[in-house]
Each structure stands twice: as structure tokens, then as C-alpha cells.
Amino acid sequence: MKVVKEEFGRKDNQTVFLFNLINGLGVEIGCINYGCIITKIKTPDKDGNFENIVVGYDTLNEYEKDSYFLGAAIGRVAGRIKEGSFELDGHAYSLAQNENNNHLHGGMKGFNQVIWDAEIIENEQEAAVRFTYLSPNGEEGYPGNLKVSVTYTLNNKNEFSIHYTGISDEKTLLNMTNHSYFNLSGDLKRDILNHSLMIKSDKFLELNDELLPTGEMLDVKGTAFDFTSERLIQTGVISEHPQNKLAGEGYDHPFLLNKQHNNEIVLKDSESGRTLTIETDEVGVVVYSGNQMKSEGLISGVPSRKYLGICLETQGLPDAIHNQQFPSWILEKEEEYSSKTIYRFGIENN
Image (cartoon, rainbow, N blue to C red; front, side, top):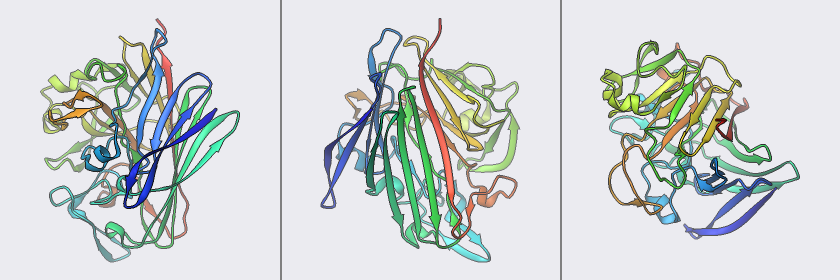
């Protein structure tokens, strides 16, 4: 188990480093301390060929210009907050409105756009990098000086974990996630429409035309949102369901997980044989099938286009601050926030 550190670029007179986590089986994960961005995850296919299974750029300059949040840590709050405002204990807070009138993924300069401190952790069992950042009181409109950490850990069981922690000196909001786009074909050889997905979820959130939750939870049964058994991603693209149409022909929806720590999300690509199994302690997962990606430019030499990757964003339910029926992600003063998701890379048994 080892971590190899190298220079990736420079920003604001600071060096941005690439950390390559490598296990004894040859699996390799690349991440940088700008935005805690995961740049690559190399895993074997059924024939033993190691290829990258996430969408990522080759240079720091491309990540600085990126509008897709490729591979990034998202915070303080993942998803949309209606009208970029909320109240805590009778005090009104105004946040950056960076998507029409709403606040998206932490604002104009969220956690995905800052340089984090980094600490390498290596031993016989695992290779890890722990990123830390102090988000000052008032950053993007949020209250409280917030100390946050994101730890990426790879072990010899081909398990990759993301552990988020946070503590604030004032009551605030915190709901973090990772915005990696997975594509199990390897090196973006194909889009993700023929990937199959399973989610242990009986409910998904209805969205309005601003992609904000209406507050209603809809049954998945009988719809293209029923992933309780394996279903191809393309089902949602060709679906006539109003919610699939609303998302831009596909998915951009939060699912309420039935239970946690129970192989609750499984993504497969039958052609490569690769599988990805996800377990989390979060209540939900936002499934985004890359519907808004534009056919402009190249990503790692491959033309950018819709459905190039799928995001499986484990997190609290979006806009919970305006939906009291959703589990809260209010963080009390000096309360410790913790969230963990495990990604298990495998090969399908034929």
C-alpha cells in the first residue's frame, strides 16, 4: 500500500499536488488537493485490463474552468437551496445564488474550488490522504467557522472509502457529498446508457422545474425510477415519465434509501464485467445521469457529451432546510458531523 505524491499544477501561487493511492492488487486512485477532486480510479475489467472508471481532466486549468463538478468534494451543502436563503433560530441568512435564484453545491466558490491541506497516511492495510480546510464564518453566506476534513482511503480488498467530518463554532448547515461521474466501460469507451443500476429504494423525491424538491415522495413502483432490481440507465432516457423529461431525459433525482450499510447501490457494466457496490450511512443518494453535459470540447481526449458518466451522490436529502419532513442537516454549535461512504470495485460473476 502506498501513496505517490507529485506536482499537478499551480494556483494562486500555491502548488496543487496529485496523490496516487495504490494497493497491492494494482488498483489506483488519483486525487488532488484542489477541491479534493478524484481525477482517476483505475480498476481491472474481466480480462485484467486496468482502465480509468471516472470522468476526469488531465490538467488543473481544465478543472478550474469546469462547470460539471467532476470528481469534486461538494459543500458546505450539496444540491440546491431554494432562493439561496434560510433561517436558523430566527436569523435569516442569504447565500450565493449561483443557479438562477437558487444556491447550488456550496455557491460561487464551494469546497470544490479551494485548495485543501493534505496529509498522507500509509500502512500495510491501507493507503489514505486526509484533506482539511477551514471554511471561515460568512463564506458563501454560511454562518460559523467550520473545520472540515475529507479522507480518501484505499485498502487491499479493493474498497475505497470517503469519510467527511466537520465541526463549527456556530450553528450552521452541512451536507457533503462527492460528485464523481462513473463510467465502468473503462477510459470512456462507451457512454453509461447500457450500465445497469440497482438501488434499494422504494421512494424518490418529486422535483419542480427548478429541480428543487416539491416535498412529495413518490413511489418508484411501475416507473423508470424502480431500481429495486437491476435496470438499464437508458430506461430513464427513453421514459415518458414527466420527472425523467423534467431532468433533461434521464435522472437528476434524490432517492430515499431503505436501509444503510447493506450493499444498497450496485452499478454494473456487463461488457467490461466491472461492478461498483456502494454502501453509505447517508439517508439518500442523488442519481444524475449526466443529462446536462454539453457536446463541447474534449474530456481526456474523448468528446464531451450527455450520458458520459453517472453520479451517485450519497448525501442528506436536498433542500431539507425548507422541508421539515426530510431528515435535518442542521449542524449544532460544536456538534461533530460525520458521513462515510464505501465504494467496492469488483468483477461480475458470470
